[in-house]
Amino acid sequence: MTSRGFKATARTSSEARAVARTQTLIKGANGIGTVRKTTLPGGLRIVTETLPSVRSATFGIWAHVGSRDETPALNGATHYLEHLLFKGTERRSALDISAAIDAVGGEMNAFTAKEYTCYYARVLDTDLPLAIDVVCDMLTGSLIREEDVDIERGAILEEIAMTEDDPGDCVHDLFAHTMLGDTPLGRPVLGTVDTVNALTADRIRRFYRKHYDPTHLVVACAGNVDHNKVVRQVRAAFEKAGTLTRSDAAPLGPREGRRGIRTAGRVELLSRKTEQAHVVLGMPGLARTDERRWALGVLNTALGGGMSSRLFQEVREKRGLAYSVYSYTSGFADCGLFGVYAGCRPSQVHDVLKICRDELDQVAEHGLSDDEISRAIGQLRGATVLGLEDTGALMNRIGKSELCWGDQMSVDDMLARIAEVTPDDVRSVARDVLGQRPSLSVIGPLKDRQASRLHDAVA
Image (cartoon, rainbow, N blue to C red; front, side):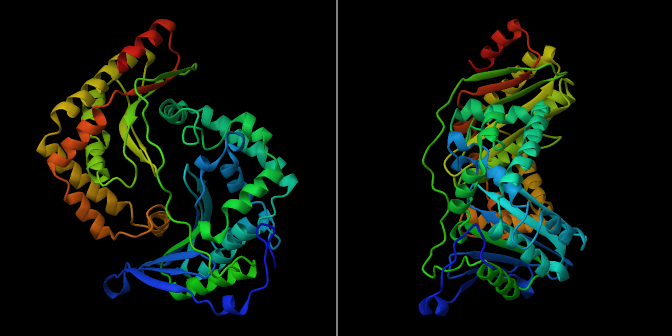
């Protein structure tokens, strides 16, 4: 049955003879952890990781589209579309979609980011064919009806309101805008009330047809799975939808970098009647392809990645000025962000900012001690392994790796790259990143006198 998202055409004899290309990307012992990739003639990539010791499987489809692909008028379209793909196809209603996965005790969800979108289902291994059929049907056969667009608009506006009611979440959107301005990366993934209200079914359908072509998609599956069976089932689902008609279609490569961040010393304040002031102090970080990202990960862990980190010890343990304080990094194709978050009483915001700024300046100038670096490397290696102990995490790793990097790295290789980071590597990246003039975003009930003083924190 032909979906309304893609136009099907008759296959020529040469297209019918086209064969899939299969590679073994990571060869695990006795097949455990083996990662294989097949590229179908229509440009669809299928990546699997085999883990025979579990009884579950997670199946996901990654789309090479995020909020940074939107024009100002389309801000929020990617996330809106994520909602609409659950609203029904020619074969299933919205209830049919959710009931099919619920009936086997599975989990189904999706998420939209600035550079990609993912739809996934986690089920028992015996129910994997059902998950494949349902998720593929959603991706290729969404109806995007006018009435569904109108109904879901209300749910999305409520989601925006929910986010705005959580200043600890909202401040990160504000920080992205502070650093990146009115650009696709600086705008919120959810869109705004005005842009969501202005989106129409026709505009969303055009966005769907442009960005959900098989060449833009990566299928990822992890758990107790057989690669060849997954390929056959996915191919059958996409051929049923009439989407694999171009035998010469090439997969879309990883997103290329085009810009950097040159913002410094910007301050954005949002006055809210909250009990706490929510603060992010930060500066440009590294793109996700930068080889120094391993050293930055160690630096981030030592600075604000745990209870033994410098920021946690200085701000919370020694002075009790905040309950939550941490640092984080965000890497995109062409740029990145490094930020320090803290939530504190409004009267303490200047003290917290001074401590954070002093710590960043000290590490930029003098670096971290060898003991701090060694502890951070051990913490990061352990967190890396523990974070991959379920099939959902494995699916995320192989899917994102194929979409964003175009290759795969084994867990052992990742651990080796972290272990290879030297104190000099960390001190060098600390100078490069932390030595920049920071910018500041704050949400809270700040008085005019307090607000004027905040500019001193980034001077």
